Image 1 (cartoon, rainbow, N blue to C red):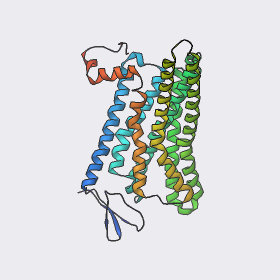
Image 2: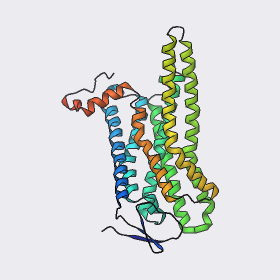
Image 3: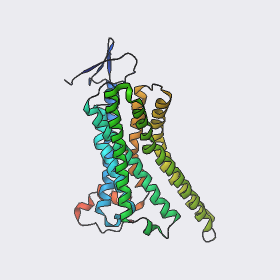
Image 4: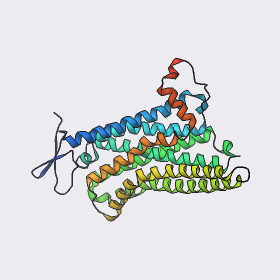
Length: 326
């Protein structure tokens, strides 16, 4: 039998998978039908996240055609998203946000540190990819000199370093808050404010500006070739560019905005958001790691070709690392 944790509390709503006994809340693993279905669904998300990002990792590592600085950024993103599927998803299901609200166990702090590190790394890697796309579309003549292997390595190192620093900041503020109770209110609030700014708001503003610039440049390029191509073809290219940019930013904002907005609203207005809402928005945000392989890989025909060869196990039948992918 799994250990039970009894917490004296009178005002916090608990998710469906936890039970109440008299005036105490009992956090238990005894599953209801809905709870089992929920865990099956979340486990499926974890499996899809792991498999999708593994396909990206294997493709980039195995096929030499994909050994480019741009794909190194996608590889870093896939590593972050894969670890989200391997670590964050299972740990969050076993020891959820609601459980950690009532426990100061070290495991909770480790779970939160891993969660913040990998989630921030995923977001910052997306930001680096947008910078790469900016130079590729807006400055094609100097792209190869601006975005080379050393620059990409620095971008990846900065992304992971900032992610780790943000997570450490949250970890330290949590420890301080426990030890000094109300005396460290300013330090804790500062960490809670700066964390989301560096993890989400600044990258979002940067990506929105970059993708808007890319869209405007792409439109200008389409108009400039209308004299050499038919209007229908130019219009098709413009629609494709619009669709790609809208999908990238739309899915990202759909997944992450609700969680960070609710967190900020709760922090600034001192309003208690129901635990079930926090957990649901957290899972929605994590689902971005599942969708990234489809968004950033399936847009390119060479990735689709690589995926087909891996799934069909063709790469195990000989050396296809030098294969020209379509």
